[in-house]
Length: 316
Image (cartoon, rainbow, N blue to C red):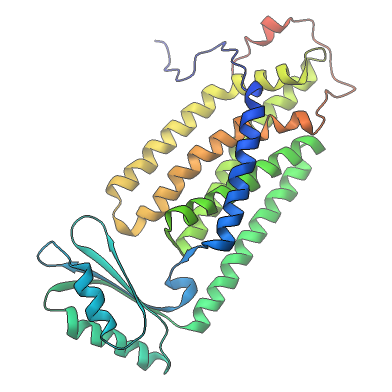
């Protein structure tokens, strides 16, 4: 019985030829993300900003956001963020940190219950003080920085100089665009988002290492073909595996987006975006950029008498 092949064997598609479009396009996205980071910024969740988060569910199935906002602001706790979520009358309220310690935060929750309890069910209540939120910011930032640093060290020892730099550029590219996803969608950025970014770092590294391992292997076999042909061959011979991994992962994450509920939906949406961007990056960013980094076959590479047509028959 023939195995399922999402990507046909012996395909010789020229991926690298699109570098004059994909590399400037990715660079533009990175620049726009940095600009939006300074202008729009992230929608930090309660984990990082501190305050009180209350999620309500309308008993009637329909929530009047305008009335809720007016009533919440009338409680006298300063500005309140009111947002709908889901499709069945879900509303979230975010109150800023109140002076007076834990008793002041508890008073916010009690006043909200007195105001909304008759018409809304309280699904979730969270309170984070300024000290805790500051510690979470530092811990989350340190975790991401250390993870990226560990990845860079690994890549530096794992590959030759050009391959290591290409993999590092691809990983940083994926991280920046993932942050851009949070900025553009204004999805809440919290500790779960940090976990999503770290997971995407691992996925990005996995995709790039697979392609670059094949590139290094082919560098030892073929000395006469050009760098463009070498990179196209590397991508084509690993594309079946790449396509299968991306498809199965996307289906699993899509199931979480559709049926995982509100608690995990944000994480799943970011992961779905991450799978797409990491696959794109491994093929259209990390590999083509090796041309500009001066990738060449090793001087002591073992010669191969097979022709280019034989090279195309390599099976991943």
